Structures are given as C-alpha cells and as structure tokens.
Length: 74
Image 1 (tube, helix red, strand yellow):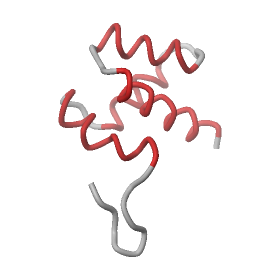
Image 2 (cartoon, one colour):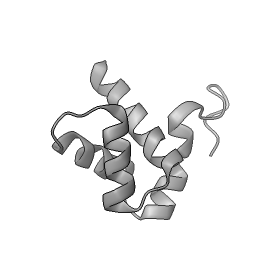
Image 3 (cartoon, rainbow, N blue to C red):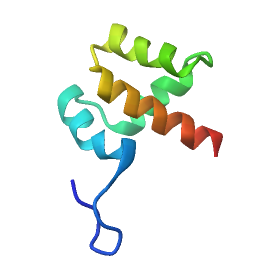
Image 4 (cartoon, rainbow, N blue to C red):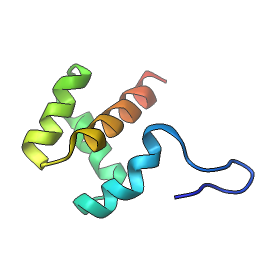
C-alpha cells in the first residue's frame, strides 16, 4: 500500500483502494463508473447506496465517494 519512494505512501481516500478491490472484488474504476452512472446525489446518499446495494462498509463507501466527487469537481 505504499507509493513510490519519491511520493511516499498513498494518503487520503485512495489509501483504502487496495482493500476495497480485495474485499469487494471489483476494480476502483468500476466502482467509480457505477457511482457516475447514478443520478447526481449528495455525498451521504451515495455512501448509503453503496452500503445498501453493494454491502460496502461505511469507511470504504465514504472514501470511494469522496475521491470520486473530488475528481469530478476537478
């Protein structure tokens, strides 16, 4: 879970990504595509959807939504 020596370890929401992929069996790109295919919603609505529909834990869902929304905000 460490980054390259020049950049140091991965921090923030992305630090959860290896665990999300391992636990739920889908690549992060696929999770992001699923989130982006949904109608726009508030952060916690999207977190609840991942938890309810995909059985994702709160921390994983929160990290994935936060990272995806930040990317889309640009």
